[in-house]
Image (cartoon, rainbow, N blue to C red; front, side, top):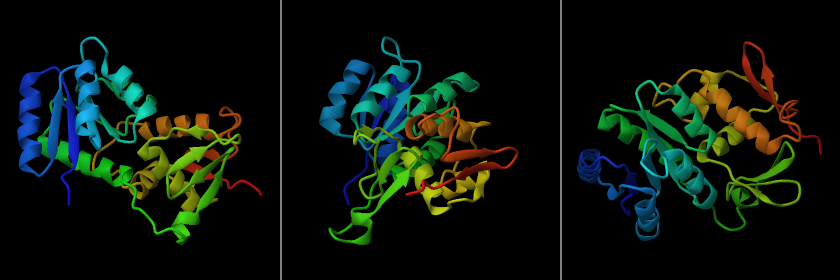
Amino acid sequence: MDAVRVLIVDDDPAIRQMLSEYLGEHGYEVAVAASGVAMRAELERARPAVVLLDIGLPGEDGLTLARFLRERYELGIIMVTGADEVVDRVAGLEVGADDYIAKPFDPRELRARIKSVLRRVQTKSAPVGSKAAREMAAIGACTLNLRSRELRDGKGREVPITAMEFALLKTFLDHPNQVLSRDQLLNLTRNREWEPFDRSIDIRIARLRRKIEENPDRPKSIKTVRGAGYMFIPRET
């Protein structure tokens, strides 16, 4: 099996070296970059599965680069934030990051999060003609291809989604007309390796609504059940 490729984007050489050595010792193939310019060059050379992205980079900041990555690449994005910077965490999720980790962090925790993101990002190929290859699901005003993980709007245009957003959509499709609490959603999407900050699921649901609902302010597909969680209402066909 080929080693998983990770790109570390951080302007601190000590952090780059420490993470490179640690992840390399655990079987990862690591590339590093100190800036957005260097990141773009490494993307073409290294073709990483996961990018670890410091939010406080000089020049182009991490949020700008995360947005660039999400719009152009199918990979996992983990934002590195300050210890108490909840605003940065929210912003990172808003631009499409799959996860975040706050400095200072234990490298073992980072490795666990990389594994978690990879589980959501990696698509297991299905044989042509199999049930998985034929599966299409209507969700909101869109259609989701469960094999390719592509979301398309009513006009057939692709709507970019993150690995976590796909996991949430799949979870809702598997549990129609059922109230799911935030904890249940985290467990069902295999996102319990870490303790999320309060309302992180709410932020992701809000992003999904903007993508699948005709009117995100009056959602018809993903309903809020006050005090309990969320419920997916299948579209009538």
